[in-house]
Image: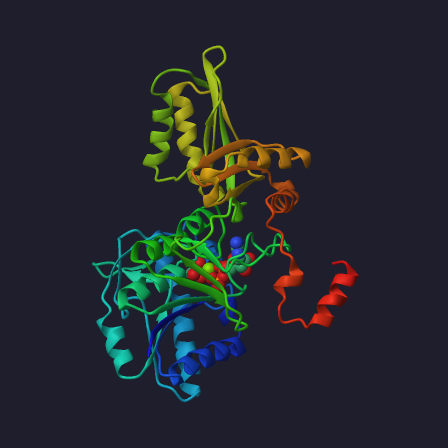
Length: 425
Ligand code: ADP
Ligand code: ASP
Ligand code: MG
């Protein structure tokens, strides 16, 4: 008997039929003698609907009330899934974040899990129930409902898997696993059988939304192996785990992020402490920025560019306006049509030339690079958002990531493979 923690995303629960499909999977595990916990996300796009609803009555909804509202999405799912399990003849109990003992920090909208008090879950499992937990939500020590940031149900699942000492943590989603790039943007993307925590962390941080970054951090810190797989078939997915036994690919994946804007502050006086003042003011407003580039100074002043989530621009503008007034900065420009592309691979450490190949590939495809940043295993560039598909496809090919579909689709018979090959696809 194993203790299995599963997680199902919104698309996997979008219709009553899919909910029954999820329930059947849980019941199958239960009937095979396993103890089963399922973490569920809000059905379909209902979190987006709730956000729209909030914005329609208040363009700047209070963070606490937003969490009260957003948490309802997962509560619909948990009870519906529990009902579906009961309809299949197995006892189920649904739990909110509070009932499941998920204690978080006090930060609304992006709380972190501080502790899991797993006794209630464990006793329900011991009495033979399938336990359904609302993902994405928790409770502060003072009793307020919090949410964990978009995509946070992944983190609920991994934290619970660590908290209850699960044997397996399965994250079911709407693709077959983690691919070399988002298969919806790069049709040639290839599913990875395994990826290291380190690389998955970089990909998630660079925009690969298939797993929330915090969930990968949790998995690495607590040694939870994640099996990311499809809710719609039984194909093996991708294992996210320690690197040890894996060969280190030079580049294992490419991520992109279209959600950031580029801000350039013009003619910043080139004197000690200016950057500290500008970025100090931004930090004081609790606005996270990403890449920063400062140009060579000319005539005593310089330009500084940085990227920021587009959703933070409204809060950033007044901060920069007062910086301009206080520091004698001439102006700032905002470019909302950028995209960031990141190439990630642990093998970069020992293989020089990745940056050169990346830049040459972009140049050959007429893609101009606006900004560059790197970590030990990642190179990121900012480009014009309109060129994102061209750039992704070219880089995917240049780094040898394109799938050889003929070998991937092992369900096909030899004759079918031959027919496909003949068609030259
Ligand atoms: P869920 O609702 O199950 O949490 P998400 O939409 O959050 O699903 O994540 C799955 C989606 O992540 C996929 O449909 C895919 O478009 C996107 N995605 C982005 N990068 C990748 C990648 N490298 N591999 C697989 N999917 C990716
Ligand atoms: N429902 C939440 C969201 O849409 C959490 C999740 O899906 O993981 O972000
Ligand atoms: Mg998700």
